[in-house]
Image (cartoon, rainbow, N blue to C red):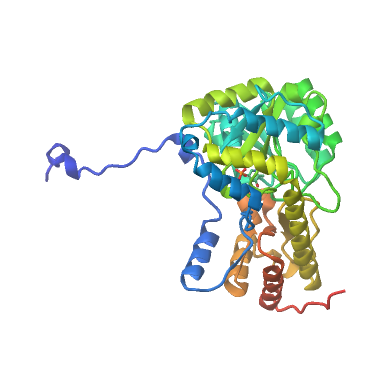
Length: 411
Ligand SMILES: Cc1ncc(COP(=O)(O)O)c(C=O)c1O
């Protein structure tokens, strides 16, 4: 028998030693669903995709026209400014002032990010380290927990569906955990549950942050998608918020610019500076033509944002009213791009992953199983209202057929 030293180097098995931070990540629970969706599509089968909150509508014409013009200007093809060009940051400040009465200094309280997700995760990296703990909302939008884990921090997930209880539990955790949590992540309107709050919630959160000395990151991705006259409040509009935290916003949802990858982190200047330091090492900023188009969008296209929100509101009504007519009781969310639906009783025992697979197999409708958002999401499905009303009606009919229930006539 040959001993190890006689095996030619080229034949020695080589395993890739990935970093522990990768091994800490839990298995990806949307894998099975995505595989089946892919197989169906490859086989030419139509799938109505309510899985991901990926907007299907294009941005306003003025934005795409500006992009075409900016593309032809050679100076826009160089590296841009890492924290975003000044006029873009000024426009973000103007919009915050207009919408929320919040004053921001474009010099040091605003940074442009490659979408809010990139800004969020790098902010966690800038603030968290081994031994630090973050409180995240549960059910949990995966990146809220994974960003903390990737930064080697620990996660405490607190149910967010009753916001008063959430605050009580934050306080209880601060009183009983040692070392105390360093960070609380807020996300209202909440993905996936659709939970919304009023300004007083953030007022109280800021007071708790000051009392127990934790930081706040508010993920305000669904700021622009509100219904029935509701206006989601900005964390930064609460007194003292600038002292304790930052807020992430995005052009992905309200401006339908998801693929453009542009969002913002605003608020506490030391946190903004820390993010700027990390980003200074990791990237060279956003393609300048995108930044210029984003200025035009914020300056001139607020009507298009309102129209997009209205469109989602109509889709929400079509989907929720339709599901209610087939006997599946679902509440109408006040904001966001998702319906958070409890699995109807006869199928509740199946669990959210198997029930999602059933809807995909038998109705050709892709949804996200609640389990993908942690244990607190089990028993629920998340349906994204990203397909048009006609497709949503088709989805309701197909679901009714798969569950063998008849729709009650429309009122
Ligand atoms: C709660 C929440 N935060 C952040 C994001 C990421 O958005 P962006 O496209 O700005 O990175 C999403 C996208 O679905 C989201 O649902």
